[in-house]
Image (cartoon, rainbow, N blue to C red):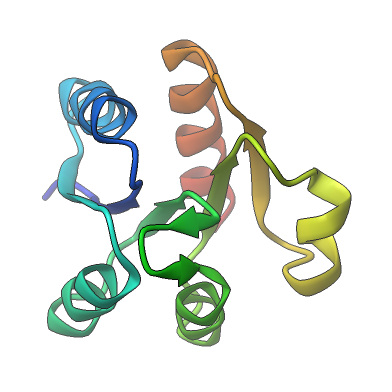
Amino acid sequence: MSQRILVAEDEFIIGVDLCDTVEEAGFEVEGPHAGISSAMLAFQKEKPDLAILDIQLDDGSVFPLAKKLADENVPIIFHSGRHTHAEVEEQFPTATTLAKPCPPSAMLEAVNTVLETN
């Protein structure tokens, strides 16, 4: 059974590219979700094996969703153009942070590394 990855990204092109990249690597993808409410609903419906989250979504900061995911031991990759690893690490010390733009190969490497270590 393929592993399920939740993608929350409000920039449409980036979200679609991200989903395509992860799907082509053989993962099941849920998303892209442009808002916290739809991403939260997807998470509540079925717990993902990993979440790739943009920090700033259409309806606010993704941190409340990230906290719920972390509480359920879902590993997180933050994918952001505005926040640094240090800013994220304070609240989510075990999360991986990738800066936008992130090459597909680097994203897949991060996904595989995170899934292997969790």
